[in-house]
Length: 147
Image (cartoon, rainbow, N blue to C red; front, side):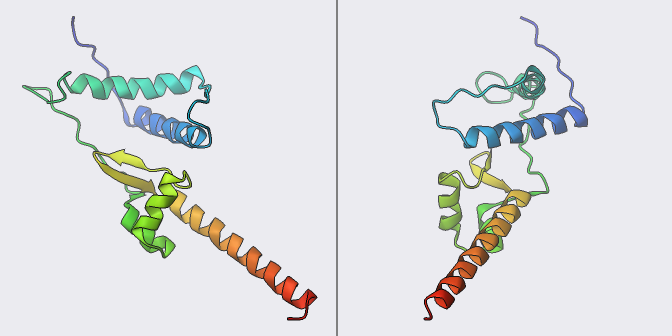
């Protein structure tokens, strides 16, 4: 069987990344056994990139001869859990708990988790807003009950 040649440009890759992030966010809000509908264009753009990457690596997973394994890349806007912990002012295990609870959505690069800086900053803003609301509610309660 002849190998399939798939060519990708930067727009194809950017579209697939955007679609994959949106799909990842949708799936993260669902239970494990829930079906998620994906429109054909989204699936095509993601599968095009998957096909191109899988065509570069033979079935054994080890690149031989001219075919080289694609090196995983980390986008400039992606950070490690340690960096996310510094931004959020918490420990790395606490960030890993947020990931396990589905509050943050990492992308695996080899065996490492990478988080979107924008998602971490959005989470921080939301948590700050919740803290302010809770403190405001507490102030109202103390004023009402004259503590």
